[in-house]
Image 1: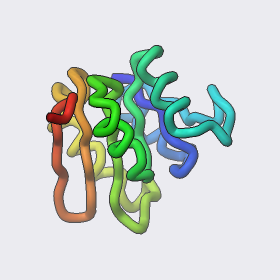
Image 2: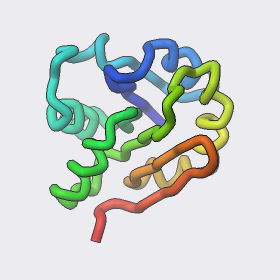
Image 3: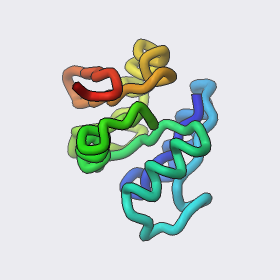
Image 4: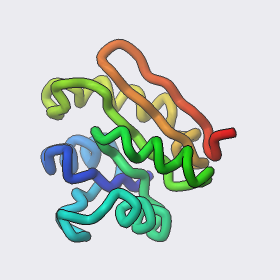
Length: 121
């Protein structure tokens, strides 16, 4: 699984995700830091990456376009730093890795997670 981390999340997530066994990059290392969400989505789709974000707009883009990819992991918590959310996120990603590899929106908050398979119908 390859994950691109959106600008609204710390680059510190790269090490956390890599330590869990996944390829991870921060958007700032591959694209314009001011890029629009649809640019990041297109890049992720073309390069077979999953988008990891704190921005709800990515889910909206998936719904509006009826896209089958890329998968999106969105966190809906106030504190999105790896030292707070890291262990929980890794556990949830391992549980839902198969769905993410096929195409899904995974929403994670402090208490639960939810997966919606793409495309939305």
